[in-house]
Image (cartoon, rainbow, N blue to C red):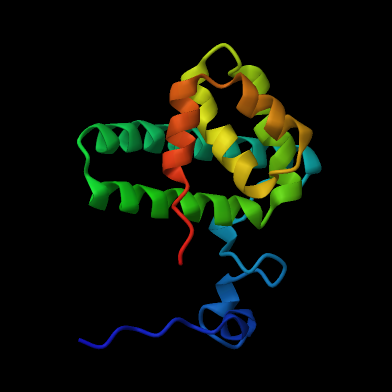
Length: 157
């Protein structure tokens, strides 16, 4: 069965196009999906929420990675590594705005070592030379450092 081809962005902006009449040229989003407020504080709040959620997702992937490792399931380990890499790539695109949020997450979750896998993984991926990266990595328990090593695939020959 042939797949539908996505509509080119310029078609959505064409006010003569049926969908273009419902689209906002400013945001390229339907009016029902545009943010209520474009204020800097609401954008910052949204960014904070999204990054915190992604860090929680990374911590859940760490639990799955630990279980796959205990079960010696190489296929699941590879799948989880690929998922982790996608998170690092996505966050890396907005590194400058994500970095302060990651550091805030570390401050809010500093009492819970298990919550620090996500920030340690991302900082290692997007800001390996940042002083906070080294500080976080040195304070992690051995089990989390081992899990971080497992999360990083070996270099390709």
